[in-house]
Image (cartoon, rainbow, N blue to C red):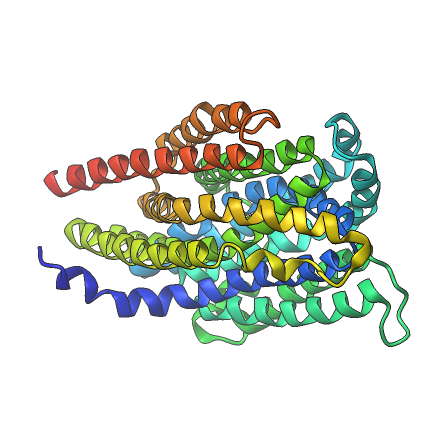
Amino acid sequence: MQLKDYTKEFQYNWKLASPVMLGMLGHTFVSFIDNIMVGQLGTAELAAVSLGNSFMFIAMSLGIGFSTAITPLIAEADASKDFIKGKSSFKHGLFLCTVLGVLLFLMVFFAKPLMYLMKQPVEVVELAIPYLDLVAFSLIPLIIFQAFKQFSDGLSMTRYPMYSTLLANIVNVVLNYVLIFGKFGFPELGIVGAAYGTLASRIIMVWHLWFLLKGKEKSKAFVTNIKFFVLDKLMLNKIINLGAPSAMQMFFEVAIFTAAIWLSGLLGKNPQAANQIALNLSSMTFMVAMGLSVASMIRVGNQKGLKAYFELRRIAFSLFLMGTLLAFGFALLFFIFHNQLPKLYVDYDDAKNLIDNTEVVSIASKLLIAAAIFQISDSIQVLVLGALRGLQDVKIPTIITFVSYWLVGFPISWFFGKADAYGSFGIWLGLLAGLTTAAILLYIRFDYLTKKLINT
């Protein structure tokens, strides 16, 4: 095959992926604004949001990972024009996501005392707990939103979740500004104000997406007249069998980044705040790869429904190539501006915290060099994982992600991340090793499966 056989797909890939990217970047941009606003309060507050969100990331990874089971089922039903199968997939997925959202809220709410057992800075823990109470409750609307989003993506209607996310972001930024700093007569709530903004915006996000889908001819029949408690055991089992491994895949990856937050906390509040800055910046570029991963899942799911396996492989490779080129661009950006980007997060005019802020920027700038290097492996692993989900292959990839992040990545982070070794940079060397291992092994799995489908 020639290069143009892959590059000619770029335009459609972008059309499908860009709304997902913008929606996901919207989520991360709000986190970016949150961190900048909270960073003005002090490094302890920034570290507290990081610690509180570390619990949230674990819960969100399970919920969001589980919800991805809906997309390939809807994409396959859409390609084969099977409305009954599509509606059943969505209804059962929505039911399971709602139940999971409630369970995850309870899990995070009752896990708060663990913070004291994790040897994190006490002032950070005391700030994090009231913040986490409210943000934990927002898991329920967030996971319900994910069910609607994954359904919408499966129908290739990727713009509508983006619109809802952008609206929620505007609400979040405005509420954060007035509630964190006490503007326009509102009480000054500090980081708890950020939590109220997050909760309100996620409730609005669910309602808005449902409202948009209800108004569109292609999706209206799916999202109205849902007999929520009339359930089919076979369909429930099918979604659980697809969703549970997908949830674990995302959990294993997010959990190693969460472990990086906790390992940074053992080094002190400034390394933890620096880790949060580097993590926030790299998560923004990761959302671009995630957008392409969703496009990969949709397009591979469609081709699977059509049983067009040669085309499936060609389209998947066009997405892998596109993702690698974009990742290379982000790597250059991080490398060139690794000293400047962390300065956005701290207030250099704050004489009281100047020494802390200078240390945070110094550590974060080194971490961005590691982040620059792992852009390419991070992009490849998430794109190939999306393609494998489109094939509804989830069990072996779950084992691969566990081995990569927890048998390769975490031991390196633990060993080299001690204060007497490489400190924060050593923690990120483990992340780099885990992501690179995952990218190689997942690619080998996809290559094997698609060749097998073509040859049968």
